[in-house]
Length: 471
Image (cartoon, rainbow, N blue to C red; front, side, top):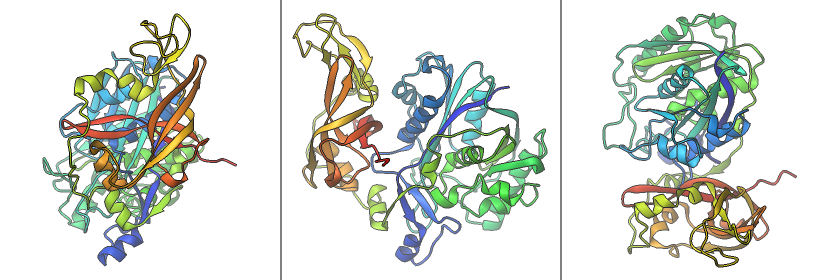
């Protein structure tokens, strides 16, 4: 039966305790959320989707070239108009001929993407990521950031035994006006809760399974207590709802909340029934799954680095103007486009004459200096720092100044990647680390992050993050 063969979760390392919100504003509009995940200044819904998808694909029992469908879901794409899924396909080195779909505009978008993959023929990848924002004084309080990914195929480890839908107009539950970055709602608590409860109840009740048999459940959760309030007309036990409730630890992550909750439940339950109830401000969907699955990255839900509220405001860009003095180095879109394989996947070149390695694989061989057509290959994503420096405040080139306003000083290193042809060395920014703690000899691993925005288009590429010491 068709369903999940692998999955992955990505949650940013930063957490903001909601007690910080109360100290800052005198009130906490995130009741039921103990802490929320905070994206770093160079993270967005695309980078989190890539990270989660990479984890899912690493555990999938198939080659990436076998993927025939890619479905993505987010309510916060980097560009209001601009293809989201094509960047995902390129960064993950998936076949250019894959069928693609992007679902957005409502928090049940993850269910749409999953349904598309389940209806498709052949292996499929689903990536769901979100980082909603709101007015810092109130609406923003519960919003977090995270991503989830699923590899779907026949002969599944976790079959999806049924999918059901319910649709009705329920205006004002959650909306974002065109051109506005902030999410808002009517704020009529009883009306909103009843609308979600009625829609989710209708969808789950339409499944060809008895929800009373579920030992795991993930339902629409704008906070940690909301799932229990909207399931009182369903026969779901409190214990089953607890397995899929994650908003109390990572916040409301929009379209990604229920998918992450579902994977949290599947990672915990045995070979029994798990149900998921999605809500999107009118549409609701329900999935029924059987079995359990080890999910890479699910422990990120609990692990975290706590930050204070002023750091949070900077990382999210609420208190920086983004203005940059000077022109910086202009790299045109066509030139950037030609280098995507090396920027995303560290594609290097082996010289057919001398066997030496060249990165990037352009021009003459760096060993024998011959003009050749290189044999391209992907360098390993794990390497070693050979030299490092810290770019202090005000010292960044103009194109990186906006990031530095939000994230402060950052480390830049020469990283060595060992290949069968020799060492690949390249300069790169170091992410997710105190720059003063980065040292020569550290082991680092590649991650795709936002580099800067130029000509109105976000530019993405590889940075490196330190590998945690497991001793």
